[in-house]
Length: 121
Image 1 (cartoon, one colour):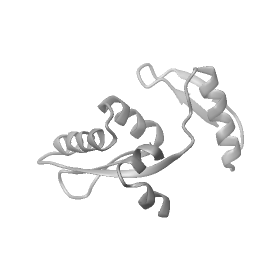
Image 2 (cartoon, rainbow, N blue to C red):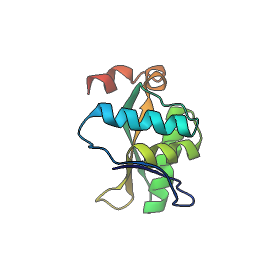
Image 3 (tube, rainbow, N blue to C red):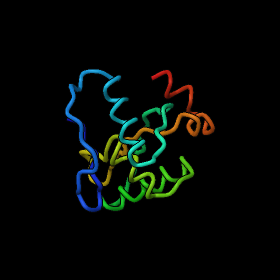
Image 4 (cartoon, one colour):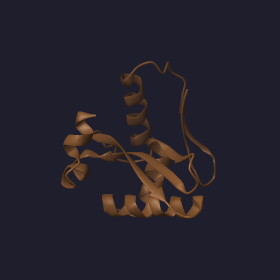
């Protein structure tokens, strides 16, 4: 089952019951969802991980968000949304270390000189 949830109200916005074994079905679901909510789906994305550090987990998390917003030249809200919807936030084993995983637009990563690195991976 595919589902989209409003993060503020936890209300189900859209669901589809389909086998989840192929990218084609996932792409069809995302296309249908984006059309229903008038949102553009970006196709050329690449995964990145941004590491944050600090005296506490909260400091490390904020440091990671600050680094990601600087890297991507975007708002903290967009970085939080990208982490929520495309990957996640991981708390490291060491105190005060956090990793943000997310998909980012390839054109932005190319502008930052990271395009070749993410495409090679």
